[in-house]
Image (cartoon, helix red, strand yellow):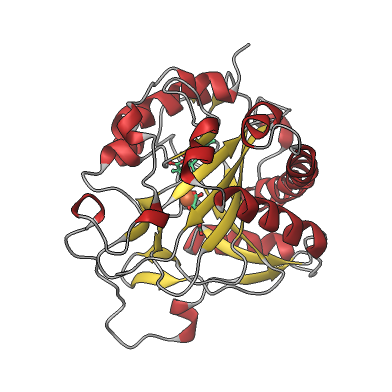
Length: 339
Ligand SMILES: C=C1C[C@]23C[C@H]1CC[C@H]2[C@@]12CCC[C@@](C)(C(=O)O1)[C@H]2[C@@H]3C(=O)O
Ligand SMILES: O=C(O)CCC(=O)C(=O)O
Ligand SMILES: [Fe+2]
């Protein structure tokens, strides 16, 4: 049986695409991080409905329909009534900040290895762009002890406990959301041929940027797995691309979590749900930290598009195979598996 982390190990990266810049040491945006032109739509006048992603209270009566509508039109929504204690959200965020505030030479000790999936480093999508992002991350799959020990040899427990607790809560919430999603697609749990799940936690850091118009926090991308739950705290920056409208900001809502559909959900729903194309803008005033949990089936699971009324749009393939196609082709991956 191979795990999610082994699926990523099959696509090794170069160190130049793993080691983030020492953001503390720069006062201007270097050429390596200077992007040609970052357009910030929408230029036209739009209604509030076109510019605000849906906010869904998970305890509301028609939650299945609301989730279905949001996934069809946006591929993204914010949830309240999710049951994750705010103290835990504050705790993971402050542990993440404690990590990113360490000096660069310290963080490098927990660097992701070229064939590895976990640890400190630049975003995995880095090799697809000629410029670097104003971002550093820390990826956790299961236990974070090995890497946390490299950062804090004697004081790693606080960090690990917060991450373990958060991953457990995210797993429960993801499953709850997954059941709502299945219902809204009219798919039974038996129709998808996997039962357990796998997940990853990504701590993202976007240091204050001296010239946010020339830099980008996280380049436009879609997430790979089924769904992502994001705690974005209270700083701006996240945007989603909506066809016919442009880049729409996802305003932080205190206590809410952002949920978005990933490529695997788009495949399993046979294109009925959109995978969210999103990015993060750089920010001059504050150091943005976000925590993303990626939820997916075990790496060996077979993804089969399910839809009674349409022919399959995509060929069936395992999670592992999709990850390896995406590692080579990024955005073109979905097109390459179209029937
Ligand atoms: C389980 C996942 C999901 C990953 C890869 C792996 C661990 C890190 C995740 C991210 C986090 C940052 C954006 C992204 C696009 C990236 O570069 O690394 C994500 C990616 C994906 O959704 O593809
Ligand atoms: O930091 C954010 O708001 C978004 C992060 C993100 O897109 C990701 O981790 O995949
Ligand atoms: Fe993302």
